[in-house]
Image 1 (cartoon, helix red, strand yellow):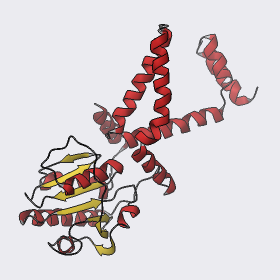
Image 2 (cartoon, one colour; image 1 turned 90 degrees about the vertical axis):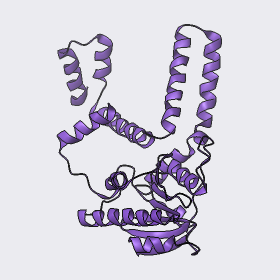
Image 3 (tube, rainbow, N blue to C red; image 1 turned 45 degrees about the vertical axis):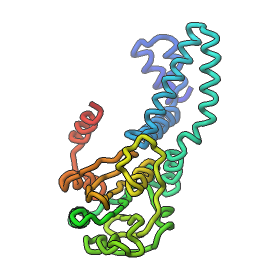
Image 4 (cartoon, rainbow, N blue to C red; image 1 turned 30 degrees about the vertical axis):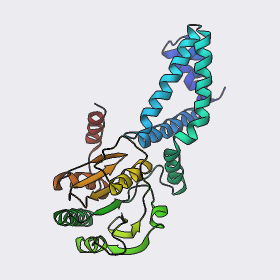
Length: 290
């Protein structure tokens, strides 16, 4: 027995744990603990990716189905157990289809090396500048009912979306954005993509949502914004051409009649680095879970 296993065996004996647990701990080494720790991190990152999306409700449904399967087996309800076990088998075959957007997002994160990291933040001055220019551009376009669709990139790259439009490279400014969405210009019907403090593409095509429960008041521009937000973590800003109402699409949900203060709250976590102590981070995490 090596020193690692010996230490776990001594710990089990000291804590006077039951024999079965002591036997398990006696075979546990440092590499096993590292293995468990890495799996826990990966599972947490997957949960973090699915949190506040439509997929999390599907995950809960799958877990409930598996629990019911175990209960039916324990109670020896053979017919129900057979039906549930077959349903679980078919469900795992269908998972790649059901979770296609989430799987695509995870693979792109891995391919870009962003699974455990986040997009670099702007410094305070640049962040405040971009947020102010975006807010001013939306307010001015809202006042004259100029339709607009602006995609703000987060951790997931949007190069595939950018390729559907015209590649540009301009500093974010209210004048530049108003010029892009000026009525009857070649790019005004598509979406502009913002990465950091630059507009990298305009006139881009976005996927339409398949959600049939949306209000009939929402037109193609809003449905495209929701559709993209269902497939990636981008924040999509919309100005209605009919009403001038400013909306925000995020995680498959749309928030309408967003005022200046609310808009800045959506944008600040994207551009501004969070500076907080470990105590504040723990407190915010607990508050979020409550």
